[in-house]
Length: 66
Image 1 (cartoon, rainbow, N blue to C red):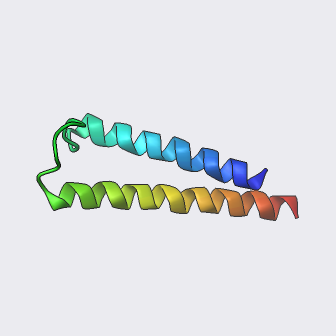
Image 2: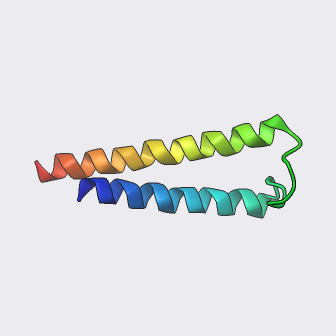
């Protein structure tokens, strides 16, 4: 159950981060290559943060169960 909670947290956070980037106009359309490395790095760091938070959610779920 903790793994499922972590997975759901990562999925929701990643979707929200992508929506935030789109609303700010940072990523280009899907068919177009990203011209700047900074935009790619920002997206990668946001997704890494989502993974980190999802892992923390899973760890909290495990600690709560114990």
